[in-house]
Length: 85
Image (cartoon, rainbow, N blue to C red; front, side):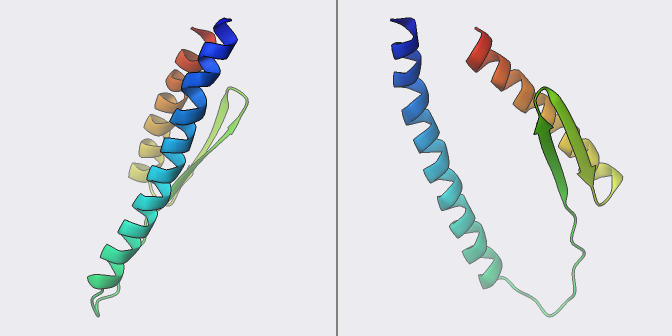
């Protein structure tokens, strides 16, 4: 019975997060396209790959890598709370 209740919460939450991500992507693209300037900017990026409980973090500079570490920790806590509580 408890598994059914978990699915009733997780499935709509997942759908809402996917829709929110798609909307934020379009909004961010529209804002970026509307405010393009002639100046060449510097691009910074970071990424986190989770292989089981082990995060692999990479970034274009130290600050972005630290941001990736923080996001990986948040992701690990959220996963723990959703699946083991």
